[in-house]
Amino acid sequence: MTTTPAPAPRRRPSWAGRNYTLLTAAAIVTNLGSHGALIAAAFAVLDAGGDGGDVGLVAAARTLPLVLFLLIGGAVADRLPRHHVMVAANALNCVSQAAFAVLVIAGEPQLWQMMLLTGLGGVGQAFFGPAAEGMLMSSVSGEQVSRAFALYRMAMQGAGLGGAALGGLMVAAIGPGWVLAVDAAAFAVAGALRSFLDVSHIPERAPGGGLLSDLRDGWREFTGRPWLWSIVAQFSVVVAVVGAAESVFGPLVARDELGGAGPWGLALGAFGAGTVGGAFLMMRWKPRRLLLAGTLCVFPLAAPSAALAVPLPVAGLAAVMFVSGVAIEVFGVSWMTAMHQEIPEEKLSRVAAYDWFGSIAMVPLATALAGPAESAFGRSPSLWGCAALVVLVTAAVLFVPDVRNLTRRTKEATPPVPPPRAAASADAIATTSADAENTVGRLG
Image (cartoon, rainbow, N blue to C red; front, side):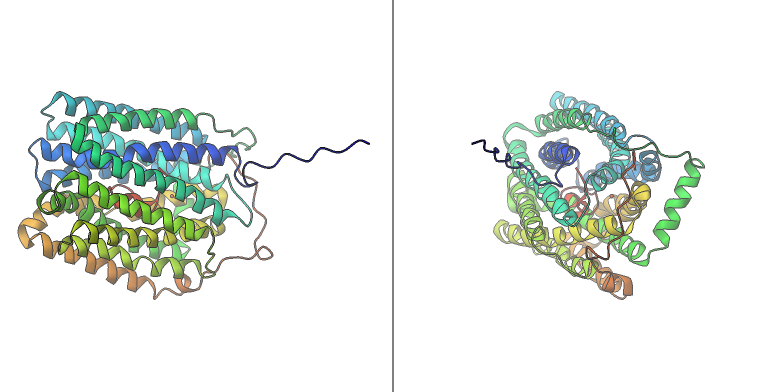
């Protein structure tokens, strides 16, 4: 009697295809390196004799070109194959971080040199971010998109957890220069993985009216949705003050009150652990009112600034960072699901670019002013001000009806997903809690 062999068990879910797997693996590698490098960059400035104002200037130097080039990056990502844009951006980040590492290891890096190299990294991120977000969103479809985004973010944030904790310890043990060198190598590996993304099944985009026409189309899509522009306006304040508090004041509080880079790395690691927990929660919880649930979870982002203002001991700060990490992942997955559900695929990268642009536009100003604000008002009052602003703008956005009422579509109510096309925005705050240049839970 002939028996039919049992089918081989699937090693991964049906929605986790080749592109999704490569994107997730590359994000893990990038976040392992980058989260340690964020700590290393701040302490490289301090070790070179800089102060809080200098730390803020270096952070602003990365974010300013990110702001300037984001919209162009989004339009380019909707015209060229997205994986080509991503690989080129990774190559630029690799070279700039390697040069930064050499300067620090050799000793006596100048402030202008550090600003220039971090600025090149910001240019790379401006082109990478919109392309990566569009690529990820076009790689999944169906009812399990929330689970796919949550799993991706859980892997990404888990790598960030390890990278932040290990990076803080490595900075204390071997110095910031070698941590920056590890980050350069991570960009090289991630770029190699992304070069294997398969876009052969994606039809070429029809010729359009040019770059400016593409930007106008993205702007109309962005401004025509009140839930979209209102939350981006909210995050223009939230990301700025959280970035200033945690990329400038955080290392200073750690140095003066907590014992240095190691404890600060552990606090950022606790935030990373919270984001992993939040992503795990969102693999199982599907809130019906996506943006209402997400926005309510932005309020806890005021807590880390308040904890630094006190300041709480390391254990208390770590607990606060963990809770805020859980909360921001609820927002992050809800936001990505809403974007995937509501924005046409062919405009994803451009809309993502406007999202990124609005969310981080105030970061350079906030980080550059952090040092002067400390001198004028004191460190603790400045941090309390950051916490108050997060609460105020988050309460304000709840008055927008679309934010309260936008609901997750059921299978029956969801229109057919258009076929993905070629090169169609974190994690934003998730990364912003370690660095001011990124917005809510971006893609690594």
